[in-house]
Image (tube, rainbow, N blue to C red; front, top):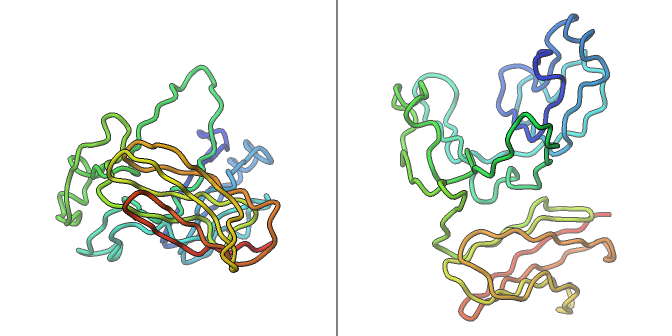
Length: 234
């Protein structure tokens, strides 16, 4: 990390590095940014050989140690295929940390690496090496919308405390009821019950008033019911 960023890092993913995940590059950088180095607590640092943080880092950072679940990662070397788009259940879909409007950078809603378009196509050395391997481009990012073709339901993090992001998809516009039940079958929370457009949706499950234990999130429409267990650990 160098001083050109101002020491402010948010919404990062550092994965499968040959060394440590985070290290301030040198003494000069350390002197420039000092205690102003900030890393948003949702940033993922995973699978780096030397660990998440270098021993020289003195700051207190809350980092996520979770597999970002890239679609294909057959190795960084040689001819292994690589597709860095996250799988549907990836923790990368967790809550993003919003950047303040500084009057310089324009706020956009482009999905980027999180959509179905293969964003490495057309410029990456990986394509020239034939390492992208799979579908190259499905251009549905223009409007910042992912196209859902099936019913899916997931929750992250799991276990959680006290909030979780419940993500689901519906292929057509319809009424959706998203509920939470305890082990006795008692409904303890209704997260949503309304008509919704086709696509991907995220709802926050706040379990602050509930006790630790296993709960079940149920997605119910007129022709589909999906139930997933979640664990609340306080």
